[in-house]
Amino acid sequence: MATLQTLINNIDYFYEITKIPMFILNKNKIIDHYPQFFFHLPKDCFKYLINSSMTRWGKVGILSSKSDITFFIIYEEYTICFGPMLCDSLHRYQSPKEIVFFNHLIKKPSINDILKKCISFDNQKFTYIQLIYQFLFNNYLSIEDMRCILHDNKKSEAEEEVKEIIITKRDYTNKIYTYLEERKFLKYIEEGESMSARSFGINFIHSESEALSDDQLQSMKYKVVATITLMTRQVIFANVPLEDAYGTSDIYIRKVDSATSSQRLNEVFMHSIIDFCALVKKNKKANYPFWIRNCIEYINQNLHKNLSLLDISNELQMNPAYISNQFKKIVGISLRDYINKRKVEEAKFLIQCTNVSLLEISTTLSFADQSHFSKVFKKYTDISPNQYKNKLKK
Image 1 (tube, rainbow, N blue to C red):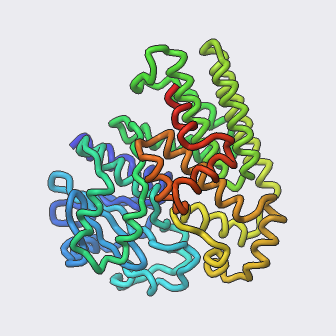
Image 2: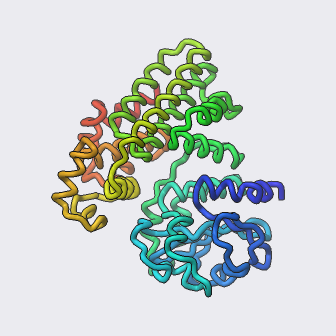
Image 3: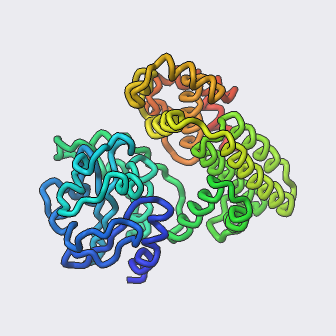
């Protein structure tokens, strides 16, 4: 019960950080606890959805439609619901009637409220579900489990989305709040809040998590490099130019490598936070146009696809020649270069943080073949994927 109480105590915080609404249902499938800033749904609204023939069950339950997806986890006599999450880009929806979950409600919220309070489902959102599952059962929820659940559901319109999920196998502790604190730290980075980020960040490298090396200084270095990688990804999502984000990352990783004391390592880490936050603040003064931000969001959410200019043009409903010309003029690099750089950065993250093979990474990110993957990877890093992987082992 203490485990469940931890979730209950963090419902609002979980929603604030992840934007995924979490509901705790009692044995009668009635809502007992919910995030206060989400919609106040009818107490029995999940009761009929859970028992619906549309819900597929395995280790977890999945209720999916073309527009939205909800996950269910049975824990003792309680049911924990995650969702609804939208299955497409937020700006695609024009009416609540287009979203199946809200259709069964007598009193429907406005589309503007839905877009403010709901979030699109993607691979990162699934890692949150995976994390909660591991926290509750001390067991791993894999992509194969998802495939088994959907195996008999041939008509499930979310099957392809779930198959495309990349399950990152990071070594999480068994305390949910530790991960949420990390998300809060990254939120400060994204907002350019240097002082708050530094106060949170220092706890990461001095945490009592499992040592990554017998050498204490080396263990701290690994943690700092991992955190710098996370900060780099976060400022990219905040639309900091790629060359600025990667350049700052490279500078500080070299400084970490040359640090000879924990005091020097702390100084390097604090300065890295300051500089990443400064990048965000600098970038906010030169915000991209709305369509550029939508374009970048679409690319970030679809790195697993073979993205073309035509795909992006159809998504944004804009002239492809105009997109190509203006993107390079505003962002500073061509659209194709931006897509490839983001794919390479995602590949680097997967090589560093998972046990996924290079072939699987190449396939997941929709490169033509391993040769093409290696060629693109080397273009932006000066080394091959295999060399990068071997470098990390040293």
